[in-house]
Image (cartoon, rainbow over all chains, first blue to last red; front, side, top):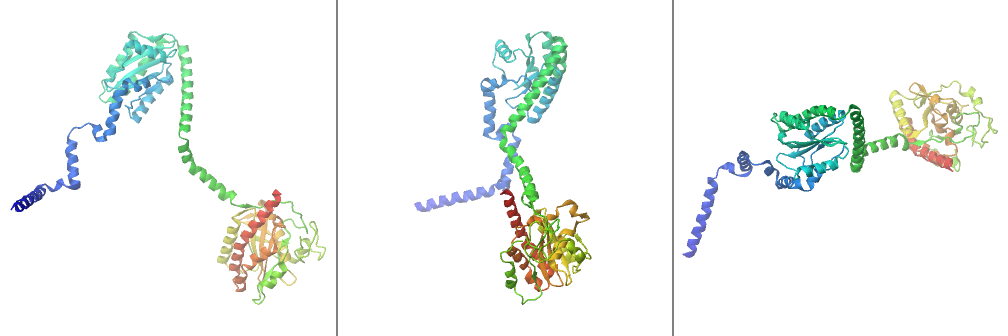
Length: 317
Length: 188
């Protein structure tokens, strides 16, 4: 009786599972089911990094954490020739190129290069004003610079400094106006990158007026030439370094070409036998040659080659 | 060195053969009526080649020459008279032949001492090879005989074109060996 009850319960459990499975809609199984799940999840407004996987999440965390650690150092190791500084990779490669283009155009025409540091919106440099000035003063000692700390996504949060080689930091309403007006005009833009582009472009234009006011024209021109020279040298060094860093890739890229040249030379020249011009005596009044071999005849099948061969023994043409 | 006419040994700088008196000038009267134009390595004064066989032989000559720089190869088909010999004819053609490639006369561009001519007497049914000065002392008669005998079977059957093709194929390694020997000699 006891066994009978157990069997009945098991049978009921199994039939229950069968019924439950049959009641599920058919599109809940297999690839259709997976698609449906994805469709449901896509309707939820989840952050992008969740889709990208755990490693992406780690990166996001690290970038915020490092702003007052190793990352901070990177913001204060600027090159003297100016340019964009984005150690957190906030901008895409393409965006970075576009901003670099704007800055390099500015630098070519100005004695005061732009040093643009890009930060996330809301990120703060954990220095007091005095500390900041001390750091930048050391970094740009005896140099001209327009240093900008731009918060990507909010131009109005931009902070900046103007440094002149002998004078050091320049303060005053002109400098405040330079940053504030550029930021105000740029903040009209809706798109973050367009806003940044507008800021840099506007800042560059306004800075010329400031430069003319602050620097005598001859000094500006001389400085400008020096900067161009430094920039060219720096570009050459970068290219050389790039080539040295990718020796193997370069070699692999050139390998087909080298092999092609080798094959061409081999097939055209090296694989061939070249006749050597010896000092040969000219005889019997002949310019080109006086050597004729023993002949063999093929008129009679009964004349064996062995008999004909006898004549040729131990002779040289 | 030997005389191409009597095959007797002669001096390196002999102006005429001390045995038979042969020299290039003396052959003039004997072969002056034979055309000397060798077009693309083919010299068919016997008139045995048709258009297709001529093409085949031109291709074979070109293929053989391809591996050499300075080599000027030709095949000559001739029907000699009784007082003429294949040896003296080869000597004559070697020095007086007008080698053309397309419309260019080769002698103006290349050194004639790199010439090699396969001589076929279709009347007397004899075959031989004539070499320029560059090959002096670097080819053994035994090796030369082996090259000529490679086409012997086809020649006996009357397939002259096939026989010549076979000879050209086996001529290539012989010339390579000769050039290697010559190179060694130059180095030493």
